Image (tube, rainbow, N blue to C red; front, side):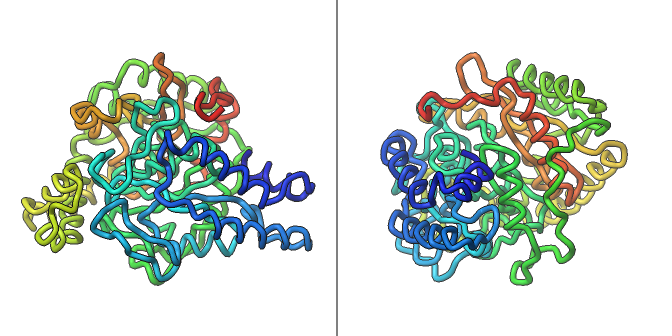
Length: 458
């Protein structure tokens, strides 16, 4: 059930928050041993919050569309009284003293926190088996990975364990699980959603974003968590655009198709390429004006992203890497150590080139309303093949928009012959987040896969 459907059932008294939370935990008990979406379910607190929501609804009081709606929280985001371990031995026993700003906003809106979800260690490591908890797996085929680093968020949504989840995105970590698991993941415009209470990876590229099974549900969540937070240095002061107009369709919308990303910069799997062409054709059939556009080469964006990300991550982890290197997973340690070998001049030059890339993307948006491009260049590979993981890790077009800060949304574009999700990415001008959700909602209505679910989640 989606957010609106659950809300209607509450209003009609055909479903209660307690019944829903109990049903979801029964589902979690049945499926999570195969998926590992959760690091820590918070059953008692969730049921207590459900009882409070139910009492308020029965008394005729509503806090809005998310009242009584369950949500999962990635385990780099603080939930008061629960551990924030970042899926690492380093932070074992680290109990959050307060809710992250986004969690506080969700609670104020009546949402019910179901627990803490699996992540790649410190949102960078990878699907590792040398961590305190096993890595999350893909509900479409548990032998495959679910994307990362918001892996538990993507896997749990696809498996029907909760209707909403919080993820974070520094190099694609909301959009990667969305791509691999066939859900909707939005990296909002940089600064639109507060990061206070979220363990950092990169001070200048971290984003917090909504993850859901539909564009409408992602929009409902974004409407609650967006807004200025003076306690987050990256937060942007200014009016928040209303998340409305999801039913406007795409007629007359100018869509710039960035073919070069997957046709020449980095050759995509043929099924991925065919899926992207299918999305473009479907939108054209609904009246969109599809135009081919070109951005700087993917390698430029990726080089800038990695230089900045690894430098800033090493600044955060340097002390632990010197004192407790063996407490990191191998994959995490290897990636974080890269930052030790990048000089200050390289960092400064990357930040300077970043400005040129932002200008290049903004220039394209003078002629189009939204971009259509690849997210992942391949379907998700098997989870225990480190060579395959290493090969596909960089084969993506998500990093560009962490560098530039533009809003970007990933969603399903079909299924591969092996039964794994294929994906598409939509990108908009700064603060045009609602426009991306509008395009995603329009595509959902005509997508041939819209009613498909993982067999595990049936």
